[in-house]
Length: 464
Image (cartoon, rainbow, N blue to C red; front, side, top):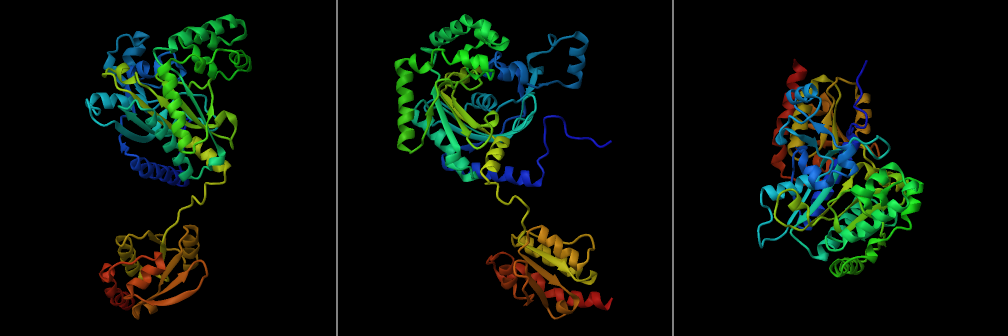
């Protein structure tokens, strides 16, 4: 019986893989223009990086985190019936998100020195959460994220929001299909009192709330705003809202962020119930939703400020903020907008062989064209000329160079325009003509210097 990929995972087949590569390339170019640099962190970290950074009471840590064990440590835990015998360095987990690991790396390598410019970093790759698989939500999913460590200014918050929206636009998500939600979650000065108000509100309506929200009343009351159950949503509609209880500094910061967004022409909706799902957020939080897809998958990216996270993972006080965007969710938004475009493979040209006698010359031309920077291919299965044309068409080749023994003996080849099917006879030594037929590129004539020997080589093949 053939094996399938594990539940909650998906193969990135060539079309999807090409789209992922385009997303990474777009992010790299755009984020670099904002001063961001790439960083790569391990796929797994010490479990404490996530439990302390994200918060043990969050669903991500409490329910969804994949634990990693070596074979020997797994046997020890199995024999003991628990993990109590494992050392801290032996307790590992697959990363459920990218921020905590990136901040750990910033702290470990002192990337934000006293008095230095902020560390502006971006990353991309797979993340892992043991969620119930559904459309747009996998157990292995792909994220692109950015983090800025070392800045407290509201302008940094606005810049990050704008950068994320610009990315979606460059990928093809229309501005009209995007909805930006923003909020402020306060800080250590104002949030504790607000948190207590929400806790009391939940306890006052405990008989109407689900078990998870009753538990959240003691662990993280603000997470009740995220509950999807109708009864809980109804109760939380009458809960106190954070923007009515911000301290002066948080209110001033929030107003400044909005002014920067206004100046940039970015429309937004203030949502006082937006809390995001992780414990490390302070002050600004934001979320971008697609209005073109189902509400359950509408959040395609978001983030916020986390001014205490560096301390939580063992560093000195360092303000920070960041975002992450889900590739799989973005694909849904692109599909809904009809903006996926042609994700099929496209090559500049195809070299077709009339018979086996010209394969040596075809291979030389193939190598020379690739060395010139062109994307070209040829038949490696001994197919008929008609079948080779079909393959070239399926690969999206705009041009086919046809090598036949008679033409090659004269130092020529036929070139077919796959759009019009018009053919012309071209001198092999006329390198620029061949290149122009392929992709309109200009190169030096000596790029294809080995072509001059093809005709004689073909004659030798014929004599054999």
